[in-house]
Structures are given as structure tokens and as C-alpha cells.
Image (tube, rainbow over all chains, first blue to last red; front, side, top):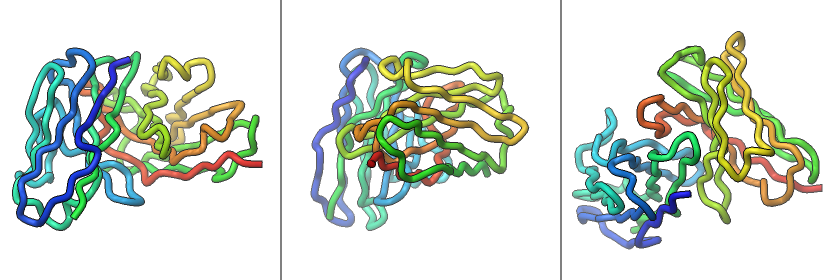
Length: 108
Length: 120
């Protein structure tokens, strides 16, 4: 199975900061990557599909980029509601597998 | 707007069968545009896709769980279900149901999740 590695595992930031999260795939997944935001006690929420397609209703301060094996999620002008854990997911190998990264926690 | 809601026991004894149901509202599970998926989350294993089902009953499972997991769909009730026999403590997790677009294979709508603990 394709392994997804996220770094860092946690990052400390302040309101107004720009934060860049990284996700690396163990093999080429082209742009078949999604990003999710999860807050404690709630389900993950889809932010971005196909590496850079922002979902409807997601603030434009979120952006995704990358292709192949290296991907980034950038949050500009970090807001209080953005403190959460972020997961990447490769969508390249369905139906054999759909795998998630281990997550990056964005902390105050 | 589609909504998904998991239901089922929160406590299952070791070696018994975990059974969960997901009820879909605000959208038809018979739509040909979506699969319907089960995902679980545990502290030790993170987020883990278990499998997906299409409206016609076609199923797709995580390779390592293929022999254990069964996902079924009931169009008349707008529900789909997960069955996981012979559970151990390692199967303790929050179980989510989710909608998976055919084109993309990400998960665009999720249930709130149901905690299932495996313990005697």
C-alpha cells in the first residue's frame, strides 16, 4: 500500500501566521490527494480534493499544491477556528486502498 | 444537504460481531454518483478506510481486512451497514460512515462517528 507521511506531527503557531503542512507519498499519486481538517470530537471535514481544488465553503486562506509524491497545505492568516488536526489522504489506488497520513496538529 | 448517521452498539465483547448501520438522509443512496464508505479512527492506527459499497451492492474492501469486513446496502431504507466478526481490542475505534464521490475517491460528507469499544 502507498504510505502517506505528514510532517511535522505538530506545529505551534499564532493567529495571523502562515502555516505550511507537508504530506509525502511513498510513490507517485499524481494529484490524487485530499486534505481534511478535524477538530476534537468531530468528524474530519474535506477541505481540498485533487491536491488543489478548494471545496465549496472553505475559506480562501486555505490552499493546496503539489503533485507526484510531495504536497503542501498552506493556511494564510491563521484564524482561531483553524487550530485543529489536518490529514492528507491519497485517492490514487481505489479500490485496492485509500490511505491517510498520520496528521499534523496545529496548536496555539 | 446529505446527512449520515451511524447507529449500533457501543460495546462489543471480544470474539463477537460488530454491526453498525449508517442512515442517509437528504440524498438517495441509490445515486450512481457515489460510493458509501466506512472509516475508523483509533489512537494507534489513525484514520483507516475499511471499505466502500455502491448502490448496486458492489463492494470494495481494504486488502488486509477483506476476509473480515462485510459492507451491505439497503436501498429501500436508504441505509448501508458494516459487519466485522471476531473482534478484538484492536477493533476498538470511532467508526464513521461517509460518502465517496465516484470521481475522486475522497470523502465529502461524514457521519458524526460512533465509538465502539471491544471489552468483556
